[in-house]
Amino acid sequence: MGLITLLLKNPVMFVILAIPLLYSVIAHEVAHGWVAYLFGDNTAKHSGRLTFNPAVHLDPMGTLALFFVGFGWAKPVPVNYANLKNFRLGLICVALAGCVTNILIATIALSLLRIGTISANPLAVTVLFVVARVNIILGAFNLIPIPPLDGSKVLMGFLPFETQRVLASIEPYGFFVLIFLLFTGLLSPVIGFVQNIIIFFIGLVLR
Image (cartoon, rainbow, N blue to C red; front, side, top):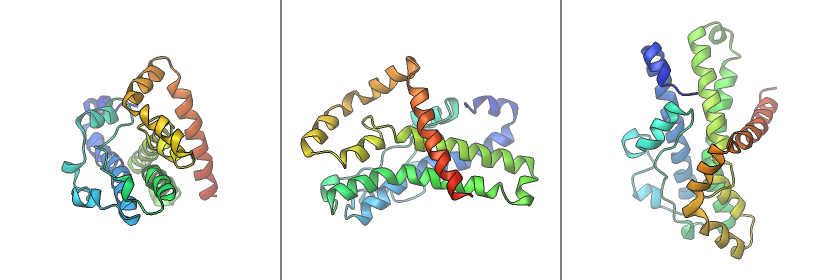
């Protein structure tokens, strides 16, 4: 769902969509930092990353991916996991924070579509639908348990320390694993499966 075509066809709509989509990516990272802070790690706070100022968060490649591919990323918020109180719980909560934030944004966007005056406005419907869709994709993609994605850290929180170290050792190669899965067509069904789970839970909330 690249948005560059939209820039050429409808620049106004592109600008309207760009702002909430960029802040969806930023909110994902800020959530990691805030939860880490709540669990006793001040690294993100001292790095000036507990802010919604785009200048300190946006990653050039991640931003381009957002508009060309339909999902992207910001600069990872630094977290020193050794500082976390209750390491296992902290690790899981910090890892889940970004994905939960994206799912919450998607849920709010879809709930707004139920309001009559909003659902009657084609522009509002388009914006909210795209925001919900992209946030569901962001949440689903990051929940995949391949380092360095958030899902791998959630998984680590439930594993013995020795197994955690093995999984962590894969992190330098995680990007290449994701590229391999992307080009072999294996990544899309995985993301689709996780998306369906997210959509199911959003449906339960919005009943």
